[in-house]
Image (tube, rainbow, N blue to C red; front, side, top):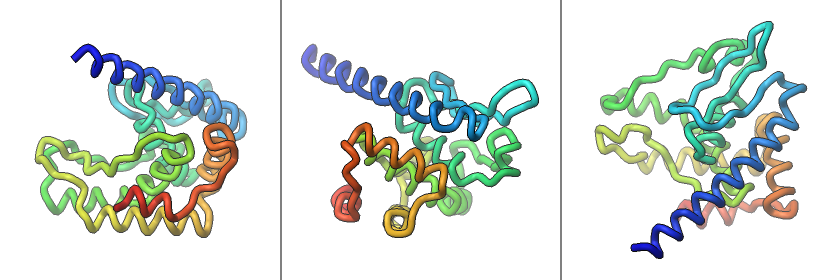
Length: 191
């Protein structure tokens, strides 16, 4: 039991170190150019639009790197008007969604989760598909997983949205010594 606690503690420390590095890179890239900061430690993820007195802030949940990468992905695809709205003006149906609501959720999550997956690979962080509907014990559908996979492959082939692409390149430099990602890596994780 003590050995498992030590292993989990080591994993947590490694994740926090990666989160700190990702936060530093993000803030170096986007604090001035996009007037946006990445901040970890929130009880729930949230995007706070900028005001005339403050920068926009992407709040990720607690110290979870995956939460930060997911929220960055939403920010990376949000257009200028959406970035002027708290939480990008998106609807969000709390846990307990019906099957129909879950299918709507999955549809709008394809691109963000594909970007999150690539950013995760770039910084050697495990990626997990998220149905975000634990109370209904729903896992991500196979259809959704395949749609995210296809979108991630397309992003690798044709490029990510420019903000995500800039971060992706910097993360690869830092965590992968600049080595590219291959479709094969996605296939292995998708198997």
